[in-house]
Amino acid sequence: MTRLEFEREVTTWYELEDFCRDIDCDIADNVMSPDARDEWINDELVDLARNSTWREMYDTLAEYDRQDGYDYYLYDNYYGEMRGVTDDDFDDYKERVMDFAERNGEFDPEEEEEEPEEPEEETVFTEENTLPAPEEDCSLDDMFSDAMVA
Image (tube, rainbow, N blue to C red; front, side, top):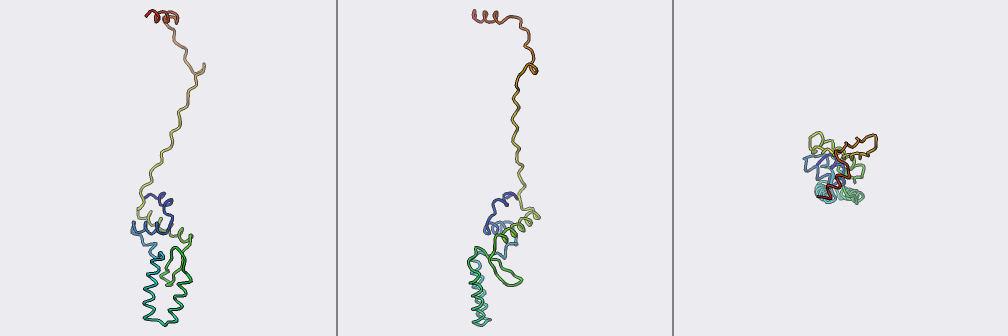
């Protein structure tokens, strides 16, 4: 895939994640689909059930429910929080993935676009740019008469 194709064709989080998997890029690893988010929440609930009170579990579930409804989610490892992503987040991640791919030579070389050929100029014959007809050994009448005889 060329850089130009990447810019034009990668327009969703799924396509960005797929491209990252293809080039072994971990930039978008903290972006989750709703299904991946549900799995992550299930794992968190098991840990919460072992190590927390029911009130802490209730508050955590309420927080997860409040953030529901996004197409994709971003998990912040530093703060341990998850939030829904926006178009601005997508543009930022896409730019970071593009930079990674360029630095690591992952893009195919751009094909040079052929410039359309300019049409040849038509030559308009005028008295100024034409040569005089050469003198003939015989006249047109003689040539016509010979052709009729033949």
